[in-house]
Image (cartoon, rainbow over all chains, first blue to last red; front, side, top):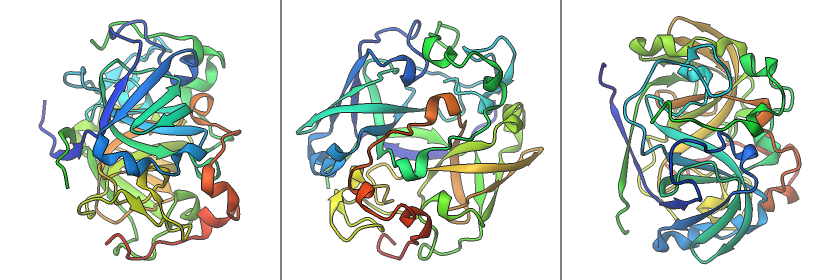
Length: 164
Length: 164
C-alpha cells in the first residue's frame, strides 16, 4: 500500500461511551439517541467551551483509533454492494477520522454530556464544532445509493466486526 | 501553551481554489457558491471514489495548514463578542481541521470539481464524506449566538487576516 503524507493533529480529550467492542454499535448517531456519551476535554482547554452551551447540536470529529490500514472498496453496513470508501461512511478510510452530529445535554467544567454516542469507548477527540443550522443543513441533498434504502435504515442498522 | 498528544492522519489529496490569501475568503461554503474548487486525490486512491458521483453534496475535512498555534477565546468573523473557540468555527483551533459541505459538480478519474470553495488554495485534504441527507440534517437545531444574527450573515461575511 503506497504511503500517504502525514498530517499532524491533536487529541483534545477523550470520549467515553457505553460501546466497549467494535461490533453491534449504532452506525450513526441518529440510531444512538438512547446512548449517552461523556467528553472529557483536556482541563487546560476548558475556557474554549464558553458559549457552546447555547447550541443544541455539536459536530464531533474523532480518531478511529482501532482501525488498522484502509480499503479502497467496501461493503457498507447498509448495503450488500461494494462502493468506493469515499461513497460510504465506513471506518476503514485512508485517514481514519469519524464525524458524528450529536445532541448536547449539558456542560460542567471540562465535561460535556451528549446524546447520540455511536463511537467506541475511549475514542480520542480531535475537534468540536458547533452545528450551525444556517450553514450545515442541506435538506434537498441527493444521497446516492442510500436514497434507495428504507429511510429508517441509518437509525436501525448496527455495526458488525467486518472492519475490526 | 501545554502540549497536546498528537494524532496522526494522512493527506489524501490537495484542494485547489481561487483563494490565494488568508483574508477576504468567504467564511462558509454557503457564501462561496460562485467559487469552484478542484480536488486532486492521490492517484492510487482513485477507486475509492466509485459511487460518490450519485451524491449532490460532500463533506470535506481538511488541514488548516497555514494556522500556527491556537487560541482558547476568539472573536469570530460574525460577531464582535468573544467566545470559546469551540463555540465558533474560527480556524485557530487546537487541532487545525476545517469542515466544509460543498456541492459536487463532476468527477473525472482522480479529480473532483465542486461549488462552495471556502478554503485556501493548496489546502491538504484529509477526508471526503458523502453527505447523508437522512443522517446529517438537523433542521430544528438551535445555534446559540448565531441565531441572533441576520440569517444571511454566514453567506455574506468574509474573512480578514485576524488569524493569519
